[in-house]
Amino acid sequence: MIAKTTAQRQAEFRARKAAEQATEVRGIFAHPDDHTEVKEAAAKIARRRMRLAKRDAG
Image (cartoon, rainbow, N blue to C red; front, side):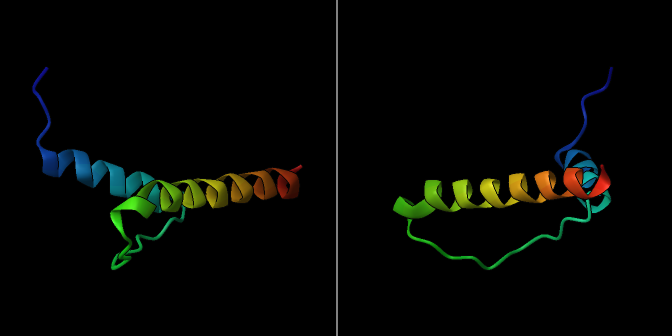
């Protein structure tokens, strides 16, 4: 098996996110001390969206 390049892995990642209808948000600047809190908030929003999607589908 041939190892994938960083560009190939990134392209696959972006394709998966596009399939999930997720858009990339850039230009968010936060203090390094806030990094964990920002990531946790994003994960919480994603979990809520998944929960609502499951509720609406069922």
